[in-house]
Structure formats: structure tokens, C-alpha cells
Length: 136
Picture 1 (cartoon, rainbow, N blue to C red):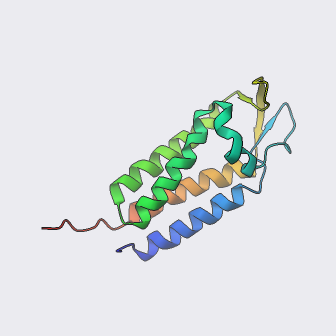
Picture 2: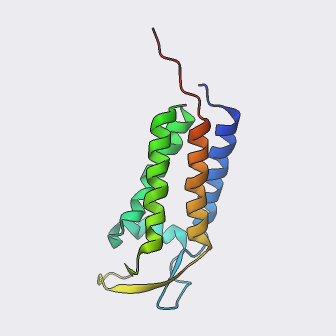
Picture 3: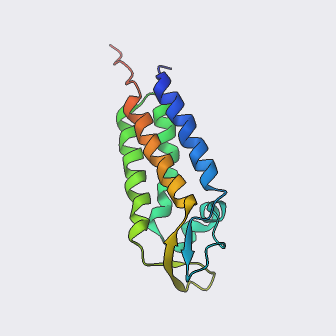
């Protein structure tokens, strides 16, 4: 494995930021901010129909690619995760219950910022990942 030191440090920081985001509220709906900590969004977010949730598997794939020194796939995956995650900033409503009713997003919280920071740091890790030399 030829992962650079900068890549390893950035990967660890990215994972720490992601873990920290799971403990924090991510957004507010209708003025209520304490109902959606990051861990619940990770578990149930795919059911909401928000495309931004799919940044999570992309981020995991980017971590794996960077860890195994696959620079270009890691850059593409982490960049896609960051763009998809950032797209939530432009959402005006989100489904927050089993009935599928949408509620207005009234604010973003620390959990969302930590989640995005995790993806940005993963992009840095990917940038510094060494490409494995081609086998002859």
C-alpha cells in the first residue's frame, strides 16, 4: 500500500468529522431543530427521497479508494459526494415522517456542516493519494 501520510491523516480527520456529524442536529424543519440528529438521517434518510443522502455511500467508496491509493476514482467519488451533499443547501422541503408529508427546511445545523467538511477533507485526501505505478 502506498498511501501517503497526508492522505492517511486526511482520511482519519474525514472519518472523525463524519462520526461527529452523526451526533449533531443536521437541519431544522418548521422551526424545530432537535428532531433530526445525523445518525437518524444516516439510517432513514434514503427513505426521504433526498438525492443528497446518496453522498454517504459515495463518501465511503471515496475513503476506500483513497486508502488504497486510487487517486482518480477517489477524486471523482469524493467530488461527487461533496456536490451531492452540498445540493441539500438548495432544498426547500424535506420528508420527515412516515406519511411522506414534506415540511419546509428552515435552517441548517452543525451536523450538516460537519458532514460537508468530512467530504471536503476526503477530497483533500484523494488529491494527495499516490497513484500506484502501472505494472509492466
